[in-house]
Every structure is written in structure tokens, then in C-alpha cells.
Image (tube, one colour):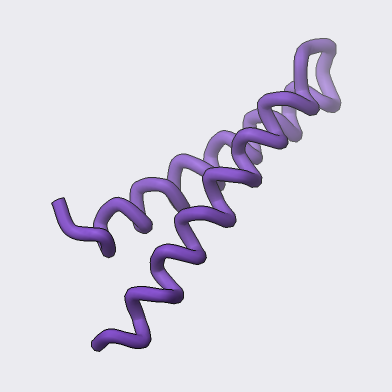
Length: 56
């Protein structure tokens, strides 16, 4: 699996996890930790995609 695909998977999972965390924040549930993990995945994935774009 290439670094580009790992970045895409991390960014996608981060976006979904962030949305789930936001929904849990509005509803009763552990929203902040889930949203923080989602944002971390999203930022990591986008960073990996951004650094890989300069090599193309």
C-alpha cells in the first residue's frame, strides 16, 4: 500500500470520525475524545497527501 493510499484512508476515516464525534457531542455521549481522534486522523492524512503531492 503506497503512502498516497494511506493518506487517503486516514483522511477519510478522520472525516467520518470527526462527524461521528460531532454528532455524539450534540447527543449524550463521549463526543470530545472521538472528535479529537478524528481531527488527528484527518490532519495526519491531509499532511501525508500534501507532502506526497510535491513528489509528483
